[in-house]
Length: 525
Image (cartoon, rainbow, N blue to C red):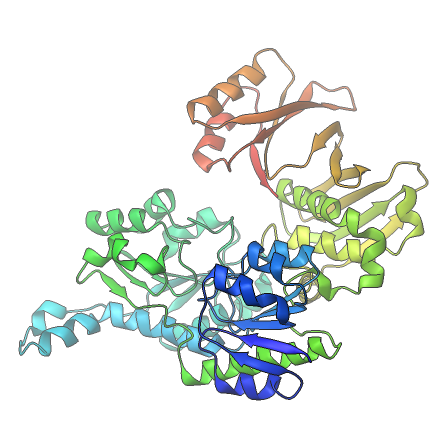
């Protein structure tokens, strides 16, 4: 008998839907060890944010076919472990769209008009009308980071309130943004100083963690107001608290926190008037809870009955028979594409893929999806193997694949942008050993690492030492380095340095100021 486990508090409609095809156990939230003891008997599990589906739990999940998250964020699920074991992870990306957008607007208004503090005051029998004078949102500029469905809804409501809206979302269609009445901002550096209010609508990733920090806050208008109903950790709470104290940030409205289990430790709690805080209520409406429960429950039923899930997060959504032949090349394809995108400038017009060797005898369509993911996820959040083709289609991005005769098992990605062309080539020298062998006119043999520093420079003495000195002074460890030579015999080379952590812009600026160095770029894979 097929068995499904539902943990956390999920609407009873989910039980009713899944019970049509399986035996359902609806149990309270459990800790890791307890869940490890019982997970082996289940074919599917439905959770919200409280249950952590860790690698240890997944290892014990002998029969698990699908993990379903009743909501958007999947931070509490080890996606990599699930993918390695062939378990589909699904979520409900649309069920709480209106709830989260409405809460964002409510938080903005409550902050602007000091509503929570005024309410608390009057309930103490006080009449402090002058104490709670607010500000109007009319004619103010709202900056939106991430123009997905929630961000778009917030933008429309804000404009109906008479606000000006500016948008930073690298892969949003500029024409569509402008048609809706907002202003498209191409570079994040140009975004901060325009906004009276800033609201975030992105998932938490390695790129967005700490996105709002001391450096970015100092680039904002003095007296800016910040709203976060997306994910905790995108804002550095200590930096925000310091900015509230200094007056650089006038107020904040925060629904999500870095450590929600230990909320008492947040430095924002001490601000009586400047910080409006709620306990992760963005999706907490009756309607949203019903929507996400029904959505993920139906996806579980679909997977258990052999159909495709509509919102799969990870790679098993690709057809296994196609994937098997090229699965070892998937990480290489994504890496090559991501590097090409990160070192390119301008809007993407074309993506060309050239394969050689054994790949010429295979169906490389899964690699095209990996390449789309590598390109698009370099500039847009929340991209996976499932939604990358759809996002690319919406933005008019297509992949053209060709083959060349060679004994080398390689993948090359050529990006044509509004500002030029970039080519990156990679090869697989063993099942899981990936090498980047060409970057434009430079030849190399680079092992793809999570963080790499690309430093184009004039080929002259002491260049490596100067760059290493800057990194050492900023406490950044170098784990490997290579200098790639230019095939046209010019006097230019590229240092490719493997490092342990992402390099901050301040460090990149120091390196770029070294005489003979072009713009230094930190690559994140």
